[in-house]
Image (cartoon, rainbow, N blue to C red; front, side, top):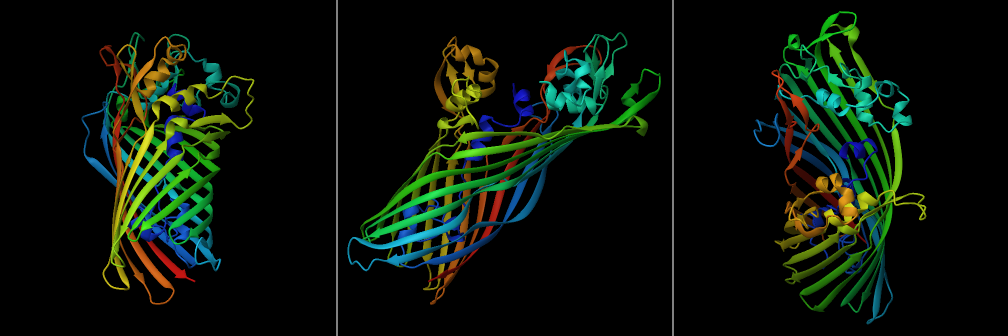
Length: 558
């Protein structure tokens, strides 16, 4: 089921969550305060969290926030499933970005009570950054990606596999088509039975196996970001109640590239004999998958900040689900190389394209802030988002037809739940011009699993594998359980405010993501050199990701 989904692009639970999640950036001040800004306001970084933030101050602002994002990922390789991981390899890479830019203007009504000021804002805030690079490698003499392709192709018609038109004129998975046309596997023995070029066939032709050690390397690269273009209006009522409204226009560009490389440690362990009797030796093979998603959407957001007494601020905001249009493109490639370069082969698929609609979760945020005159403040936020309401739809949906995404939408409903986000920030003014800041946030994962009516643990893949039993209520999901993964951020910063209009803020933030296990190819049926049959575990790669952000805000009040 997973292979079929990947060959058609994305439209999976993990992609829906990835596209919908927010990791707020904003100005250097809001980042340094852990984005605990729901009740504070007065800063352009706060407006994306609570639209009422623009009404808190009586002046206009222009700010620009350049920054640097550094991805640091530690990767460990295991040749045989989870466990037995080798030494960790660390890969770091930085990119420039623009977390925030925008302006607000403030107009006084001249009233001493009631509606005193109206503010308008136009800004861009970054709400996620996908920067991610990993590299893992090790030695494996049990399994091979090329051998797994051959195993997965069992029963497929070779006449279809060899035709380039099959990418668009058949329902065969594109990865298998690219691998076959790139020379990675071929038929032997019975019709439509395949062996990989990293395998040896037994003398009697009963089985095939990996005959020697392979040096394997896996690479993953992700680039892109999500940014909200915000049109804001705020109103100040008697310096006690502040109300705001946003129209948000998010856009995102997410690029993913995955490649896998395996090479014979000793090529003489991997002889290849052709029908004409000529023999050569496998040296290496490579596989690549590229995916690009471009998204645009719209949402509305309302917020309020109350100042019931001096020193206390209470804030709340609500954001509607975002209506996204997602346009995807993807392609596959494969190549094999031998001692005799005459037999080298390579292939690339055409570029696949598909567009669909995605409804993201609604969000609600609540906050309280305590100010100590002009000495500083402490702020606490709680935000929740319900991912079970995510829904895929066709761009031109015909309500008379069956729901194309029924299976995926059921998975969204049951295996995505509520995400919780707690943010804390503190600010201390050490002189009239200089301020120190610190922040922390903790975000839970919305992904979950269930206990079924027969007492079994049901994870997402189990649900897909037995989908019709749940659809027809032969089996039922009874009790949900969350995995308990946490994303944590730690931030520090300082700010300078001149006696005139200029101000300057700096922030450093580190985001620590939960460890993720990645399988570069699937587990599959295999044999050893003695013909012993087993369902073997493919390699696993354990990735631990930290994302560092350094931002500097330059601002002017007017």
